[in-house]
Length: 289
Image (cartoon, rainbow, N blue to C red):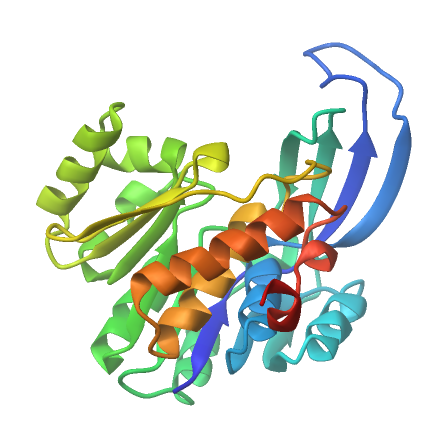
């Protein structure tokens, strides 16, 4: 069984600040780092480090070779990554002393996916293979529709949420999202009301909602399972959700039961937030065990 992650690859620019900048304000940065990132790249690294057989599809510009090289070093198959004439996507990330972040995204090459590229990529996968998606690339509706026609297991992390309501969400098999994205998708604010609304709207899907320091919850309309966190000293929360996603779905794709997959993912995410960076903070399976 193969896992295809059709997603973003970004250059992350980190600025450590005493507090987030307000509108019209100029503040000093305490430090600066350039690193690899993108929700797609991060999740591919996490999937691979968790033991999954992962193929990444997407696009980079001429400035993005180091992103592809990093994926290769993490054990990800990169032969489906295309090259664009415009720059790679990037993210400007402010990090405060509590490890919280504020992110500005530029789509760049991530927004250059074509239907021909989608057909070429999906031709290498069959029914039962897994497709992991985030909302940092274009042509999402086409990817979901064509993958569903092939019988692939479709996982959607609707982040960033803008535009997700226009996608063919009834074709998605798994949703994994934080509480804010869950509330936007459900049109509710109370946690139990969110879960009930999601199951009513998408009766054939399964849901994983991450709750930050309060852990995570799985719900499929019949079974509900809650998972706590492992307290650590928070350094940078940037890659926590992507780490959780990768470890959870690598485990589920390998046949592990949901409670075991959630517990493993929670351990991995806790390790990730105790380190700087997004992809570089993601632990290996051996570390987590």
